[in-house]
Length: 381
Image (cartoon, rainbow, N blue to C red; front, side):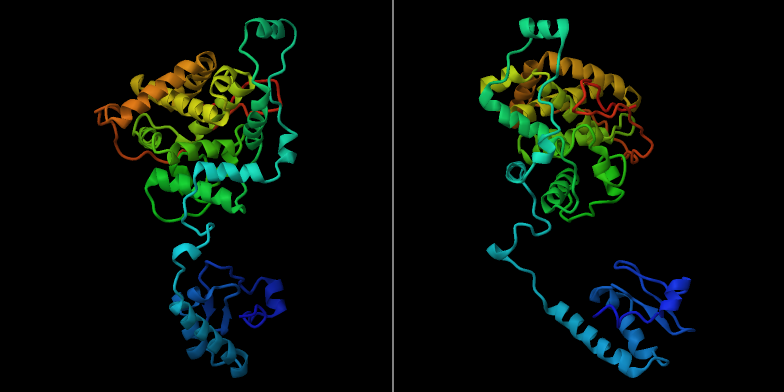
């Protein structure tokens, strides 16, 4: 239907606030006394659900027939056509079709092919040191990253500068995949809403919680849930995060760990391992997973609660930067045992009580600027 013929309010009514403008998704209002019906933007399916078609034919005594009859017929025809439409199946279905999961490699390829030059200008690949700190780092610090690996390192840091764009289909699929893998849902969800708080974001919009880590934080979560080796670990940590006493915001904690990985990369703590493997992205991914595993183990065994989170994260950053190889080896052994059914992060302990409430009242401090010289994180309070 065209918009002009679907609105029966006069300009004066709209200007005086007497008319009610409705958008898609809201129930239209019908005033029998004034014979006013407004359904601007209501889809055909909503017309049937709210009885608008019946109202047009049975309640419109004061309207001129020629004003509505054509539209009624057209609406009915459109609705009947909707009922007979069959969904696409087989190979002709679009790769952007809602409901299709996205792999880490596909999401990464998206960032490898789009223009990231505006974001790349913001990165500072390494920490700037001066004076004795620079001399100490030169004499006793880790080796420099091989020249051929620096472009891959810069890509990681550039993605960390990108925000979440809800209009980008790939960004939306990444969010949907994370949600489905953690919750077991088979259906798409809204990109904004309270359900994101259930996953451990601070609010209804995940984009507001990515500062200091950017879209890299979501790529790390995607890696964690889409790798068959790390998915069981991710699910166990997620269940631990909803413990009735030891609860913590899963996704926000993950963002903090991504930030630690970024700082470790910039401070060249991962250079030795990257040079050994001749890769950067897989090393950063494994370092992130290993750090998350260590945090979960400390959280469970030392019975930490949300009030301990700031201290735990600070100690975790020191350990992670000092002994990255140790963390990576621990992850390797853990995953090998899990694959044989010999290891569980939570053991046989039945520690799960009622589901934890959303983390609406948490506050955060230390917003990180990747261009600054400081390594201060986005620590939880």
